[in-house]
Image 1 (spheres, rainbow, N blue to C red):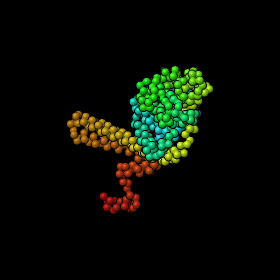
Image 2: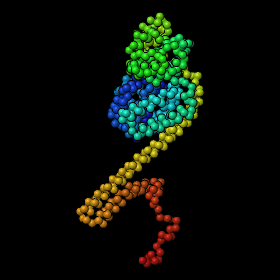
Image 3: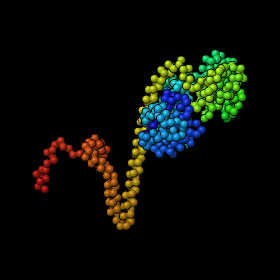
Image 4: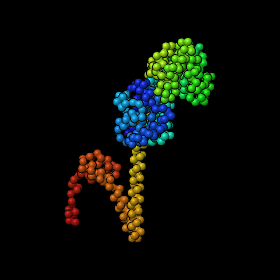
Amino acid sequence: MSIVAYGLNHRTASVELRERIAFPEENLGNMLSQLTHDLGNIREAAIISTCNRTELYCSLSDDNTRDIGQWLTANRPVALAELEGASYKHWDNDAAKHMIRVAAGLDSQMLGEPQIMGQVKAAYEVARETGTIGPELDLLSRMTLSTAKDIRTQTEIGRNPISVAYAAVSLATQIFTNLNTKRALLLGAGDTISLVAEHLAAKKIAGMAIANRTLANAQILAARFDATAMQLSDVASRLADYDVVISSTASSLPILGKGAVEGAIKKRKHRPMFMVDIAVPRDIESEVANLPDVYLYTIDDLSNIVQANIEQRQKAAQGAEVIVDMGTERYERERRIHNDKALLTRLRDEAEATRIGELNKALSSLEKTGDAEAALTMLSRGLTNKFIHPPTAAIRTASADGKTELVDQLSKVYKLETESTENPETDLPTQSDSDV
């Protein structure tokens, strides 16, 4: 079995390509079931799909990943050539190392951002519930999350805030120097929007509203920040009341179109509106950026906002990479132990099957003849022949092929002693031997 990490991220693909290949959270379980059903060489699978990456982690019976690319092109609006030009593959220990770096935020657009660890954990929980996780990916996920947690607690990788949420609020303070007189509308009620709300509250924003498809979720988040709650269907009619709009939903279609924003700007008498679309696929139509008095930024525009804290996190990342290497080594060791256990289990199962088979033969003979001694002799000979056949064949083949190391290893395993040739005279027949 091989483990592969196959995917693309913000370094290899544009936001436009990433949003086309992204998997909606509500459909992830169905896609995992379809993936393992459609591709016979995939034994286990998990999909991590966030705004910055879509990655498939698979346990394969072979080294064929082209089928994965073809499956993606059949299920997402992307051409194979386009996908191959933007994708990457990591195998076995390299896959483990990559996944640890992902979970720890070391491979994020915002170095050290904390949300990704929860996203990785959630992705594996979906795979477990779907039934596409087995021993290989279970071990990988456990070792990954354990190492990522060590990195978060033992380094300062997350001390200086440079998350997408923080970057969005920082950009708002550049557009509006004073947020005390501004009102913000947040679309969505997930972890990212929750962090945005925390940062806006810290900046003493004048007012906030939370809009979500499920009103109850919006109300729960709004209660934490003394904000207004509304449904997404009400956003267009109330958009003009807000100076800052930050969106991060899991919608597969845009929430705000050009017409709705254009109407809001007219109602505002062309007072500027700042908008950040963190979602992939995008929540706000890209044409909105062409409207006057609208400052629209996507997730790809945020990377320059966090430079002040990058150096501190890069220093912390150096220490984190040491922990990554240690975690990868632990995974490799645990995987070897796991594989050895599986081998020993198979060996014991085969030995037990042999024992039962020979015992049944002996019992059958005893029942027919009534000769206990003959039955026991048959049993002992049968067990001896069956058990020594594999090492006997291996020793003969290794000797014929000149594989002396294998012969020596088998000799040690079975505690076999070869005759000494240090004093060849002792091997000559004596007088008494000749007379006998």
